[in-house]
Length: 281
Ligand code: ATR
Image (tube, rainbow, N blue to C red; front, side, top):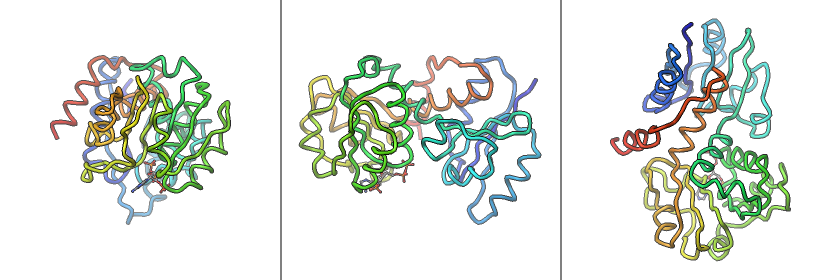
């Protein structure tokens, strides 16, 4: 049986998701297609989606700018999508569309793969930088995994407070302003950068300067263009270990594939291949 998957968004031309899912299909011995469906914001979204319902899709990914726009068109929302308030994966089953958000689990898997002790030891102190959609997904996954100490730094303090009050980990999360963050960064075992600061073309920018970090701290950035952001470069110079953003891209796709096919494909060698593809751009 052949499977039909797709990616919906705007723009999607340069997305690496088709490459990732084609690799997964080969590894899982599944025949099928993963096509890109670009919906311009000028086109009525509802019309395109209604036509899509008639297609024989097994599942699709949904990306910028439609992760929230899709919600009214879904029949059910999984717990992750409810908690995050955004959907990036849809399972089409028996005429129903079910929405999921795989970003949080994807991030968690990528981190566990490289730094398992950060998740195993629930007492590790984590600083989440940013309070947007990606931060919400990661915060939810970390709290679900039992992490007890997660503080949030954000440019707009109220958004950090809103996120911290929505889901409470074991302790009362502390919120930090970006001005306070540099002097407190040394308290954390893991710093997770989720804002868009430092993304191409503004590759020289950092969300806040990192100079005083704890021994053995891990700095993680979910940006993957560029792969080594200015944030990661500063963290490395301050003695931290670093965790690259393309790994989250890979594992959120792995979890989406698992939702669609009930198979978890191996990611062996794919991190390096993905890295080469990103660097070759
Ligand atoms: P995503 O879904 O990718 O997380 P988002 O929901 O738009 O995107 O969230 C963007 C995040 O980047 C927010 O935390 C935002 O901070 P605010 O809540 O203050 O807007 C943060 N961000 C964007 N540009 C920033 C900048 N120049 N400096 C600091 N933070 C920034």
